[in-house]
Image (cartoon, rainbow, N blue to C red; front, side, top):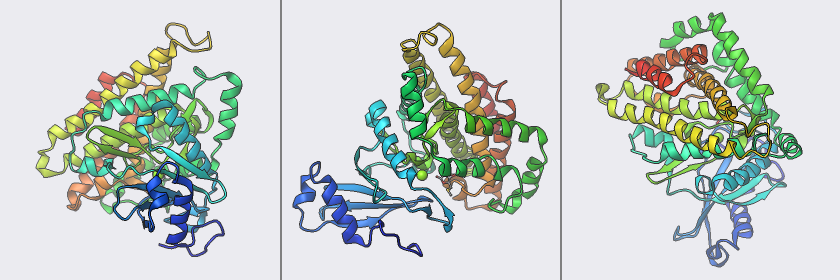
Amino acid sequence: SAPATSIAYQFLDDADVIAFARLHVADQYPAFAQAAALQVEEIGDGNINYVYRVCTPDRLASVIVKQGLPWVRIIGESWPLSLVRVRIEAETLAFEAECAADLVPALYHFDDARSAIVMEDIGDHRNLRHAFIEKAALPFLGEHMGRFLATTLYRSSDLALDAHDKKARVARFINPDQCKITEDLFFLDPFCDHERNSINPALRSDAEALWSDQQLKVEVAELKLRFLSTPEALLHGDLHAGSIFVREDSTKIIDPEFAFFGPAGFDIGSWMAGLWLAACAHTELEAGANKGYIEQLCAHAVTSWEAFATQYQAQAVTSIDASFAVAGVAERCLQRMLSDAIGYAGCELVRRTLGLAHVLELESISEEGARAKAERRALALGRELILQRHALSDMVVLDATIRRHLS
Ligand code: SR1
Ligand code: MG
């Protein structure tokens, strides 16, 4: 819906969006310069920003224009949000393109004054949530995600960067409002009776049991402290399935507006939890006939971890810092990243079940009893991952645990 207050930099109307796109991409898209009339549609379905597709009348050429507002779109002016996130998103997209250009939309232009980005239209891809619901076979997804994680998380770490450069980057990617959203929605609300939570009434007693679990709260506090105080690598920061678009042969990761320097395991765990949330949903669909697809989802987690670990290790032995190019250092880093990832995946499973922002894979289960069973499964899996993250720190044991919860 249109914001209550309009702000000077905000696009006034369709013509304004079109003029902005035409001005900034005429070089890359001669068709934009030549076309007498361009078309625009607002296509954003996210929680925070406005997203427009601008295209030629024949739709053969198109770009995406994304504009941020100084508040959360779905909440309104009562939840202010700094516009620094738009610059951070643009700079993160540029960094990710240096790491893995084929896995992100190309950045065409960033306009600080208008808090807007013009980028490649990846409209020939579809959102991974819909692909999961439709049980799409995605043979390259695990490798693509493993490579994205290995390159972005390694090349922004102290193993790869000059010490002064690394600290300058940490400062440049300070993103406090976005981090506060995660600190609250991911680590606080779902573990207490918070008014922002959205809880299926059938799960009320499960939620109350979770809220009284003091051991769990201590583990979540430790994970939150690491999130707050571990500038290990430049994270995407919001790597759920809604931030990933796919074709059978291609993967694009979008929306890094939550980027900041944090613990590498946060991105890895957020990604894996997306697979396991979809798998929980599929356990209750089609009378349990989805075993084959659940297997595929579990396999994506294993494949992506193996691709990540292999590529991380291969890069680590080339570290510019002699302290880190020592045999055994990469293995130690990987061990810690995996146990962090398991803990953060557990939090993501819990917050997508009890917190403010749920996932379509679970929400679209129309039969209430089936949805409650799938959500209960996600909650139980999330709890075990948080509590057992150190004991599960081996992909074989982890995979067996996931499969036990899904059977
Ligand atoms: C108010 S924002 C809610 C959620 O949407 C974003 O994509 C993040 O995941 C955030 O937690
Ligand atoms: Mg987003």
